[in-house]
Length: 173
Image 1 (cartoon, rainbow, N blue to C red):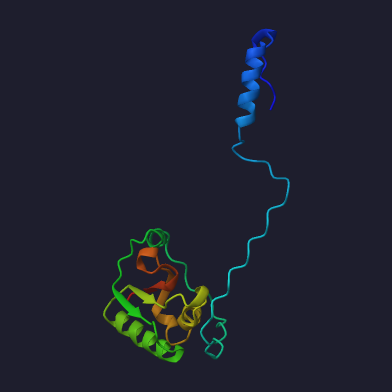
Image 2: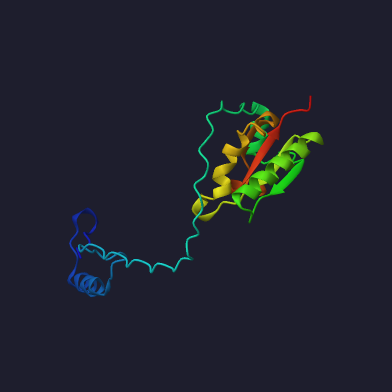
């Protein structure tokens, strides 16, 4: 440790030097210097995973024109989670085929009742790559469902976030 300099060039007296040396020996730095590289953390043990269930590949995306963009006001309300949900359908724990059939029936019934917004809960799946979640945009472009839909958007966190979607239906007419 360096010895403190006295103000305006004054030298320390012998008693002050002795006291300073005594104090300097007892001081420990707050953050000790380490010039050696840090040791790499040990990798965490990999948890045993459940056996992977083989599923057929998702159907290819339809080459239909994109859905109409949601109106600006509706889009802003959607992002803020202030959407009036008229109907809800939960597709959790269904096979892809069963979910597609139930979704089609539900959207037709909702439109017949004059509903404008349907909350479709698909679930996120593992790592956000759920089969139903990935299949929903393709399903909404099928010839049977496409004429009913004016747009869709990922749900706000209070309505399910990445595991749910708002599907906006066209007006009856």
